[in-house]
Length: 235
Image 1 (cartoon, one colour):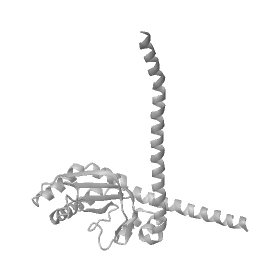
Image 2: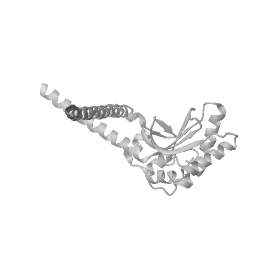
Image 3: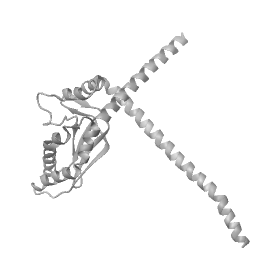
Image 4: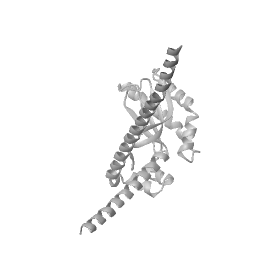
């Protein structure tokens, strides 16, 4: 009886592990295939928040022009990176029209995003590449969207839902995760926990190796220092 219970537990553990691995792989596919947009307002004042939305609208009006020819997230990121100075200029001109002279810094970077819903699509929390705009001090509430595939409103028309756009770029597993997020809530939390543990362990190993290397260096230097001291004494 014990052997049977043990065998069932092994089978159950294997099934759960395989399911977690598949969930992690699907999440990685989403992270690798999506380019986000992140705009940080100067402050939470009503005017700064309004300015942030004006900058958003100005960028989205040009976004399709910049990324239409892109067939992958990487090519979309390259197209935008080549236009960072243009993007900054458009944002600053938009602000100047409102009498605001805050500077704007634009960059393509990797950053953490929380879970976010766009129409009938929900993107899970994770590490995404993003076009990030910092307005002024960047201390106000931010605004998120998706540059590639284009899920930003009003970039997505009423006749083409975000789910349709996603299905044009991703396989069935990704579409299922983004269109039925409740099915994956627990599994994604588990993946998030495993990632955190792995990151902690990797950082611990890196720190330990650095400390060991420093200790080895001190040990190697000690005999040399002793020899130098002895030679000095002989002289």
